[in-house]
Amino acid sequence: MPNSDLLPSLLFKINENQLALEAAILELSNWVEQRGSADIADNVRGALEAIDRNEEFINLSLAVLMSPE
Image (cartoon, rainbow, N blue to C red; front, side, top):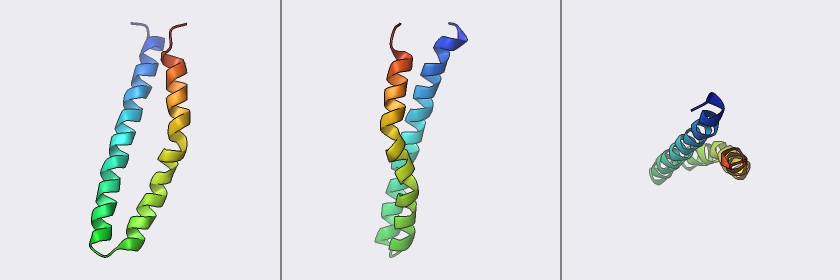
């Protein structure tokens, strides 16, 4: 497999890892909030918004990279 074919698969896996980390961190922020630290939980959720903002662009870009030419 040429290296150029490997790049889309690599980026897809990195994106999967990023989304899994987002979900785990969100669960932790919910746990923190339940224990009375709403400000910290809000700060964490605010930091995670970047992942949400970029998700559609990343998915569309990956679809283009992975589509047959």
